[in-house]
Image: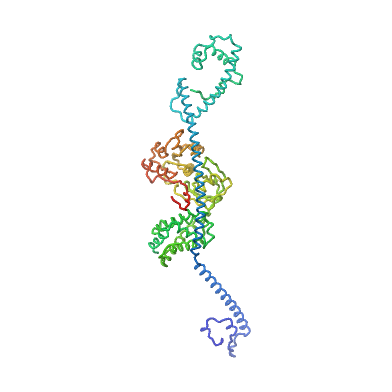
Length: 248
Length: 379
């Protein structure tokens, strides 16, 4: 076998052209070789395949070189210049300052608003506290006057309830007093001259004297009015006062 | 790895203060512009954090047993920022460039040491992130209720889009589209519930961009992003001692979560909750506390004010009030509130005879002081 005078061992694997050019020596008459046509066809096929593989191999090699160059380029990517880094750093600091100033402004605004709010609230509370205090004192005075002691220190919630109660009580009193006054005036007009102090029991009379202060003459029609002739403003006056609480 | 040489070179960069991290991030954003959008507009706090974290890592580099879990956790937590494995080499390159820039005696040996060390750090962090890959990197949670309780406190109910398992007492970081890229920590006020809802207590801090937005701007329908739960204030499940819970401000949230856990899972025990505030207005959750107290016979709630004289509530610093109701020496104590309150209460409880090992704390502070105008973040 000859292959352009090169031996396969020296020249590496045969190239496609080697395969195409190969010539086999004729076989002897005693041992006829392969059919020439089959050998030729096979060799041609092998040559084509080899050619394709060689070409693909070259392409892959190129690709690999390209990739390697890319990797090298990425790896040795020139660091951004100090100047560029400096410019970006300055820009970043400027942005940071704006944000910091905005946050600072917001903090000042809110803390001032909060301080104001808390001050107003404290003032309102102190006012409320003073009212409660006054109410408590008033209540203590009433208790002392009424002679009924509750015992133990009342807490704020209780006092607030009492303040609310006292307000309602005051309102009811005002309504009652107006009714009384109107009824009284009407009584005075209609009953004048018919009243007699003996109608009231003496004890009640004495109490009335103490609490309201009008003389027996005035108390008498008051009593008779309450007992026999309720004021016209609907229901008894006592119903306007919260039923669950009493001032003592 | 030449650790002393690395520490020396890090020291040189750190000596330049804010300049070094500023240079690092500028370098990173120039070489990899796509990383910029992972950070907030203002980088002041971020810069402070980076070098603090690097310093921590360098300090512990001899003690890998301690360092590895920290790095794994860090890697896991970084998933919520959208950090990918591909970002790590970019950060490493900029870190080396920064160290080189600030070091007159930079050498190839030093570069090799840092490359190796950073490689290990990145590998552990990426590993930590991969270990957590069965969980989503973040949860989207819709605000389903927003209840403005006081002038600066709101209680939010949020519904995560996927189950978010947390231990009562743990904290969850969150980000709102109203303040993009700013993550803040909040502690849910409930144990995991069948409906998956989380209750968040938010106090608006003066000048705090996230907290004020959550209190004053957030609305039902807003979508928050939640990070994975972390934290150490979990109930000691080994213990069945009675509990003493002390809360100041929104430190109430983790305490409610612990109460919720006792109610749901037991073991049955007495729980005394003390809640402190400056004024009565500070009790933003009284109605719910009253409800809990009525529902659970084992729970006693005591509220105390420190700065309001006219009040029906107990008066005094909460630590003081707690001791008035003692003794607590047989209790497990949990304390959450602002730094001064926590320190004061813990000191008193310890003096009172509660062993430190049985006192667990969580400090609730403004997540950060805002950067000053010259870009400094001071703690």
